[in-house]
Image (cartoon, rainbow, N blue to C red; front, side):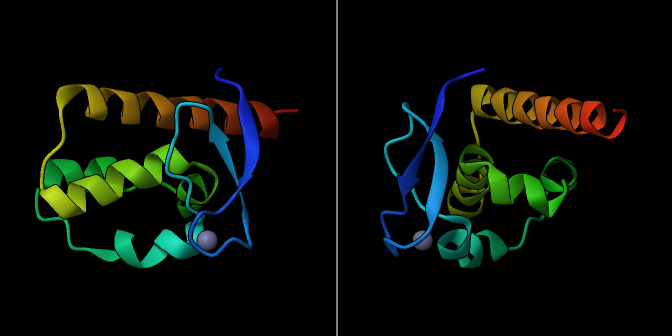
Length: 100
Ligand SMILES: [Zn+2]
């Protein structure tokens, strides 16, 4: 897993966000919430983005991808695969937590 560090949100300069070094534009969940509200028409994409809200809260990358899709209406194969991988990892982490 990539190293993550706490960084202040670029927009509100109030909330801290967990981000990896590769992420340049760091914005907190509260600031991005409105941008994630767009309608998703493609049923396949709708299903992909239908994940627990906590995942979006704790993961900047997932928020970014969803906002990109809402904005542009499309994603590259790599972005889709990366999104699915992160969701899978989060789900695995969650189930290992609850089984303890
Ligand atoms: Zn913010």
